[in-house]
Amino acid sequence: MGLMDFIKGELIEIIEWTDDSRDTLSFRWPDDDKNIKNGAQLIVRESQTVQFVYLGQFGDTFGPGKHTLTTDNIPVLTKLQGWKYGFGSPFKADVYYLNTRLFTGNKWGTSNPVMMRDPDFGIVRARAFGTYDFHITDPKLFLKEVAGSDQHFRLDEFADTMRSRIVSLFSEALAQAKIPVLDVAARYQEVGNALLPLINPVTTAKYGLEMTSFILENVSLPPEVEQAIDKRSSMAAVGNLNDYVKFQMAQGMGSGQGGGAGGFASEMAVGMAMAQQMMQQQGGVLGSQATPPAAPPPVPTQGATPPPIPAAAPAAAELMSPADAAKVLGVSEADVLQTLEAGDLKGKKIGTTWRITKAAIDQFLQS
Image (cartoon, rainbow, N blue to C red; front, side, top):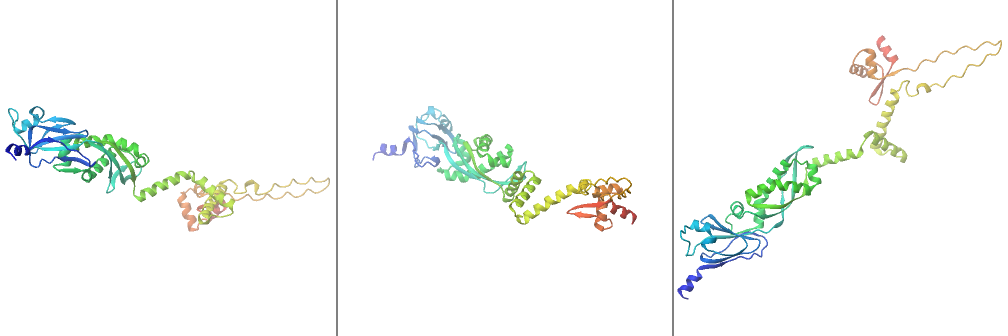
């Protein structure tokens, strides 16, 4: 081997990289400690970007195409190298290939519950997970903040590096959007689209990458909150509680079954409510219909002694509630209830409701 062949073997004439791994984000081209010759060919394929780094400083950036490395198209390297009159000698530099294609279906999720303030439930703890698609937009910033000097930075390393950062951005964006938890759980796609404009400015400015889609697949709440939501839904489905209880009682009577303890309680509740309404009507349950109308007196025959006029029937005892009795006695309703419980004032307790006759009040006043 001649001297020229040896020198030629120590110089790099063509720089290119083909990626068939489908999971590589950045790749430092192996120079095998060789120098790049003046006029070397740099080949950059579609969905690739090449970034030169010289002594730890970013040099020139090249997009897709075939580039001849001369003074004209590497002005940054020329300045960094200090070539005043152009370079004619080989040089060394790190060459990074970055994959700018769209990486889809990347998973994200909260390892711990995220605390958030909700207008319906107050402060709740929520877990969420989903997927996102992204691509690199700023090679220099991505190398500086994410990949670093890694020779072969892969997608799995990126997922480990970015998972906590994505979750932090999601939490901040969700807090800014002020979306209720129930709306988040009901409209995943809309919420993801709404959060994307809040997340992208941060990822682009901090990490040099842009998300094209951010998808929520599930948002879960603690079991006690989910139970509260179920109870609220059940109450909304029942509607009017009184009508529901009456309907349940009618169903039980129609089928001839009491419906167990729940059915018995429902029947008692409806019965007590009906009794209270009837007792509040003037004249009691029977009212004016309690005594049948008296038969008209017989027409006396001529010369006969007219029959004696019957004595008037005693009026039905007037029933009063504790509030009515309080008005009669000029005291508070609480005082009346206390006197009833003590037994000083006689009354009848039906369920939770007291009823007092006027005679009982008269007797209490005379005692």
